[in-house]
Length: 336
Ligand code: PHE
Image 1 (cartoon, rainbow, N blue to C red):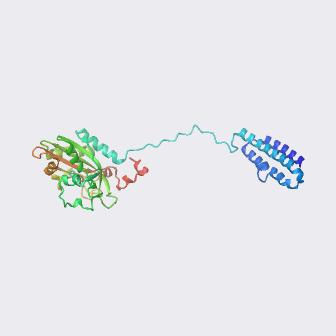
Image 2 (spheres, rainbow, N blue to C red):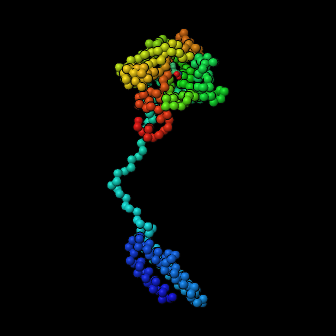
Image 3 (spheres, rainbow, N blue to C red):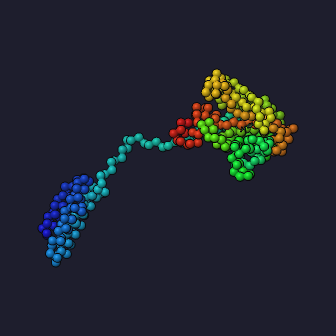
């Protein structure tokens, strides 16, 4: 047994000298150190050694195993540490990885463009809370107590007193409560309506409200300002249509249509064959609204307008489903 131990040691010394790579080192480990390797086989044979000699042989075998393990570890360190194949060198000629660059949400871009036009015409920008009370969302805006817009069908009520604003018009009231005329402001923000969700409508969308109050403001000012805005935003050469309509907080009131910029007014799918696109609601501020905020309607007049910007952005970019704005799918948003 002694002789076998010595010759195994010599064989291992030879073998380790011949190892030049990780694979060879692993073969060495399997041959000598593994559970079914040569050293383990000798340990198995201890049973056959007379009992009084066993401790001495056991000690020799332990020394052999430690020595061979040391050969293995020394070689492993010399080959590069881990004994696993070395990591391929870093290729410095590969092009770098591009960082992810965000884009502005298409609605933010639309709003930025609208703001820039109104700011250049002397308007300021204001905002107000999305959680409103009945007074600002309806009552001060001259909605009669039984007006259908207050219906549960449309309005998300949060409690007896609080609701999600259904339009940005309550910001008109808040601005007038805080400031005296002359006033020229736009008020962008989110609004909420309890509508069936579809490609065309969502329970939340965005409006830009406008308000101008001063002595002697006329419907002519309203027309001039809004035609200027529409021309700068949508481009020259459009036809306009002002259609009388009703809002509780303006009198007279109008919906503004432009000739369809896709078909030029001949009729297409976008304008539902009418040749016209409705783009905003407007009117002269109702005297009752001025009463609510403590302005004297005999002294001041004003105009107000409101437009939904989700639809504007959809028309502008040819987007056919409003829900895409709110999915926040990067593949969609990155296109703008
Ligand atoms: N608040 C109205 C709406 O949501 C729009 C509007 C605003 C109309 C201001 C006239 C004046 O439909």
